[in-house]
Structures are given as C-alpha cells and as structure tokens.
Image 1 (cartoon, helix red, strand yellow):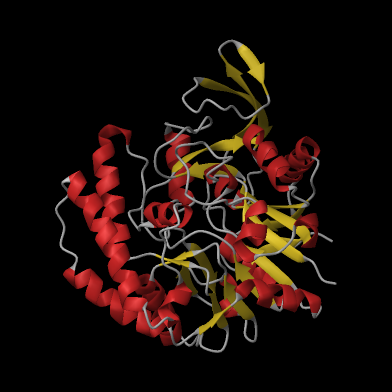
Image 2: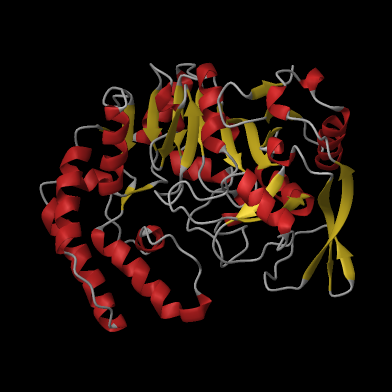
Length: 422
C-alpha cells in the first residue's frame, strides 16, 4: 500500500514550493492540492519561460500526471478560467490531466466584495488580505453556508447561488458598503460553465483508490506553516490549515497514510502583509535580500518583508508537521554577503526562549549566530561537493539544530538549478 508524500512550506509562505513540486513530480503519478485559494501563487521557471499557478497543482507541467484540486481548496471560477486558459495557450492542455473535488468550496462574487468590506471595516487593524474572497469563503464553509463545486451539477444550482448571494447582500447592507456586482457576476457565471468542462469527482474516493492501486501521490500545500489558522501568528494568518494535518482533512486520507514530509524553507525569511516577523531587517541588508531575491508576490506583486533565517520558528514548524526532509531554497540570493546571521533563540521580557510564542504582539529580540559568507556564485554548482566550505557549514548547522537532513538545495529559479543530495 502506497503512502501519500507531502510537500509544504515551513515559513510565512513564498518558500518556492511550485519549483520543488515541479522537480519532484517525475517520481510521482499524481499531484494533489489540499488547501488554500488563489491568493497563493506558485512560480515555476524552465526552458526560458516563467509560469505562475494559483489553484492548479504544480504537477501540471509534467506530462501524463493526474492533478487533483482537493476538497480543502477554495476555488474562484473566474481566476481558475484565466489560469487554465493561459496554460492552454502556452501548450499545456489540462482537460485530460486535471480533476476537481465536488467538495471544494466556491468563491462567489460576493465573497470578494465581503473581503474588501471586512478589511475596510478594520481600519488600521487590517490583516493585509489579498482581497480574493478567501476568508469569507472559508467562513461560509465553517458556518455551513458554503456553496461547493458539486452544486454546479445540481438542477437547483441557480437557487442555491441566489440564496447565498442574498445572505451576503444582507451582511453588506449592515456594513454600509457600496459595490457593483453586475460585471463580476456575469464573468462568474460564464466561468462556472467553463469549469464544468473538467472532471468533477469524489476526490476522497479517488485519492484513496489511487493509493490502494499502488500509485505514487504527492500532496501539495499553499502558503506556509506560520500562516496556519491554528498554529500560525494569529490573527495574521490565512483561513485554512496549511500544516501536514491539513492533508488528511483536505484530501480525505487517514493519518497513517502519510509518508515522507518534505518541508521547504528559504535560507532567509520573508513574509507579506501585517503580523510579527522577529528577524525582519529594516536596513540595507533587508533591501538587498528583497532586490536580489526578487521578493514580490507572484499573484499580488506586493513587496515582501525580508529578514534572517529564524530557527526558532523553523524548528516549531518542523515539530508541527513531522518533517522528514528539508529543502533549502534561495541561498544563492546571499552569494555576495560577507556575514550571514541565523536566529537561534528569542529574548522576550528579559527571558530567553527557544519556543515560538503565543503572544504575537510581544517585543521579541532575536539572539543570533553569525556565519562567514560563502562569497561564491552557487548557481555555478551542480553537486553538493562543489559547494564552498562556508555554505556547507551553514547547511550542516541547520541540520544539527533541527535534527532533519537537508536533502535538496536550490541554487537558482530554473528546475535545472536544483541539487539533490545522495
């Protein structure tokens, strides 16, 4: 009996999951997305082309693979259509490769408007949402008012939609929020007809049947562990469970069917939007990380906040997820740095701790360990043995501190710039 392997981010998202899924996919027959919505973009680069995926699994570029959008995902039909048509125009026809869960929830036009209205009502306490309607959709899901992909197949589809829309309009009236839904709604109805071209399936049966048939399956997450609605830096989080446990609820597989857990982290840290970021840099080094790392959101274009690697947060993420292998991304961004720092503890209220704190508003002073920069263009390396000694020391320190091996190192954006350690 096959087990489902998992790949997820260990920081605040944007760790480079899309590239890694694309690199790992040749070893798998199925790639399944288990949570999140189109606010999360996975960027992939190969053969001189750059692609950004929002809802479609990153295995779509490897021919002959089955790709599944699981029940834990929230899907915007308009953005899905845009994404699918762009891929088709570039020569990647999804019709035979992509399946969508009946139980995935739909982002309605009014969800987007509610997202904007709720954020406006927060004033200076804004979360920093992307405005894609993700939060309101998950809210409806939990409150048992959601509309699902399977409802598109119902003869009562229009009345189900009308009921949901009326409920949202009553909320918007209470918020005194002005809006015009006509054009967005027209686009949405056209897009749901396009969505219905794809195979809409009972995904939990499909995934378990594939595993029973000894098919290799890779579960792909979005965002990162520190944005998990339960274990992230709440309330500055996303609306779903981004951690490994989300695979079980987002695809309908049992915990004993989880196999390898690949945890992805950058060699430094970034985050977008509001919320705590203990190692954030407000100096020239932070600006250099942003500039050299091209740290702007794949979907939103928002500038990412940048800082040193945070091992307190990383070890917390590894614990929560049961990570078995680490994948280190974007160390090449720091090729020319003289000194590189890593946070190994926090000072909070005069006390030193290595635990990730509950109180997100706490004044945190990171305790750093310094490393000599490798002063080498890592993009020229194609084996671990070619890495400079200073970079090897950096990797080995991470392995000792976390107790997890670094098995894959990315030294550039292209799929060829990936070193797998034997």
